[in-house]
Amino acid sequence: MNPYLLCLQDVEVSYPTNGNRPGTRNVVLNNIRLNIRAGEFLSLVGPTGCGKSTILRLILGSQFPTRGQVLVDGQAVSGVDRDRGVVFQKYSLFPHLTVLENIAYGPLLERTSMLQRVLYTPAYRRIRRQSQEEAREYLVRIGLQPWDGDKYPYELSGGMQQRVAIAQALMMQPQILLMDEPFGALDHNTRLAMQLLILEQWEEFHMTVIFITHDLEEACYVGTRVIGLSQYWSDDDGEPGVGSIIVTDLPTPGGHPKPTAMRATAEFHALLEQVRHDALDPTNRQRLQQFNLTHQDALKPEPLSAPEVPEAEEKADA
Amino acid sequence: MKSFFRTDAQPSLAATWVLSILFFVVLIAAYLLGSYYRHLENPQDKVMPTFSEMLDGLKRSAIEPDRNGDLRLWIDTLASAQRFGLAIAVIFLAIPLGVGMGLFPYVEALFYRFLVFFDKIPALSVLPILFIIFGLDELSKIALIVIGVFPTVALDAHLRAKSIPREQLHKAQTLGASEHEIAYRIVLPQIFPKMLDTIRLNLKAMMLLLIAGESLAATVGLGYRIFVVRRYVAMDIIIPYVLWMTGLLFLTDWFIQWVIRRRYVWVDK
Image 1 (cartoon, each protein chain N blue to C red):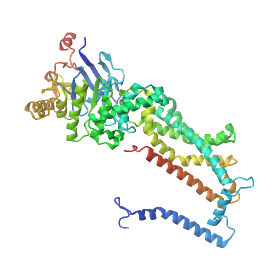
Image 2 (image 1 turned 90 degrees about the horizontal axis):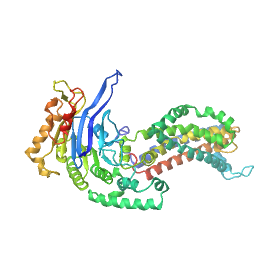
Image 3 (image 1 turned 45 degrees about the vertical axis):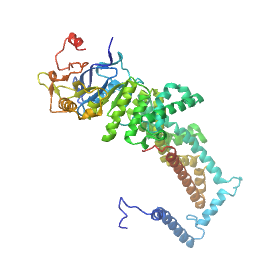
Image 4 (image 1 turned 90 degrees about the vertical axis):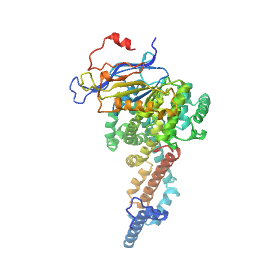
């Protein structure tokens, strides 16, 4: 019935301001309405401090909306669980475990009971050996050497660490993979290689990916859909808006995954320019009506300061 | 000397060693000199015994049985080590407690303020209370060490557990880890080497409390012995005992550092 895997319904995130004056709240996200189909590769861009990571945490389940709800498969997200994987810019890997132990950690928890682990039973040790062998095979497929498996994360370069972090998350075959600036700390060439890697894995595992980045070109290249989130907008009367809102929602051209040559095309550069102007330029306060929401699943936001839109119109949009 | 106060100085191995032992040599030389002049004035001087007198004292403690047929140094060391070891074993329990406080807000609410208060009790001031409640035997001496150091270790584990990035906890949850897995498989192993360091730095405090306990109520033990022989101004016993205790602590400290370097290569990387 509901064609969407993930829905953010009128999500607001706000917290009381410091002065403790009743009624005043600091609004981070104003009215986020987002429907995402299974298999989408959604890139999320926006100016610093616009709340990209907040959206990611809402979907992950480590934070909850002040208003509205986040639904996965029609169920409200109630906490972090094994159905949604995550890769952070850092801290994704456990420093005290070897690469293989890191990758095999999830499957091992899945296949053994707590009692087995505490008692360190023969069955547990056998399953652990199996999981680590599988992890070693996977290691090779993501571009590491088999012997890298016995190293600790600190012994790997930043790019290799993120490869392992991706492998660690993918071993769980999550419905949704959340990535928060996963390649943010990597140099340019490593970054390009990692983009290809994640696209390969996305194709192979048929996942849904939510990808946050501050690199617009990266966002438009890897994503099937680009969302621009910005706190710099104004309502239709020209009054500055409160909190961040989705100001751009576009499908990206060029097929998925895109050939790397796509990056050089005029069409691609036109897209970059447009998103940069609409979503990333703090001096450009777009009015509600001007938002470029041309993706087929895009919903028009109904921010708190704007007049109510009748229920019927919302249905027509969806 | 031009390069002495330079951050990029690279002293040779020889220079490093010469400088490292310099103050040891100065101290020993000063002692020998003082001892020599005191013995010139009074050959019976007991305050600064000569090395041969101390060696003799050590021999009497370590290889010659006393009136009761005991080799004092060894039975004293064994008794103190037992108390010390039991206390350390209990103090290790502070680590899982601290991790629990750092991760579970209810556990934190239950223990945190109490432990901060408890930590501020000057341990020595409860010694009379311990003697009254537990009597003069082993329990009160071990309890004194535990009371003195347990809260410190628990509070340190609490801080360290809290400083583990939240991302790590969420990551573990996405891999299907339960709350207990997170606490005792993800957080505790990560802070454990740091906690070994904390215990290492508290060895002195533990020894201090042990000696205090032994000096007031014991029939055997390193701390007991130095306070007994003090009555006879037996510096030839006291000084070797002090050096022996220092040496033991130094070795323990060094051993813990070695374990950390060896077993936890990923620390601070």
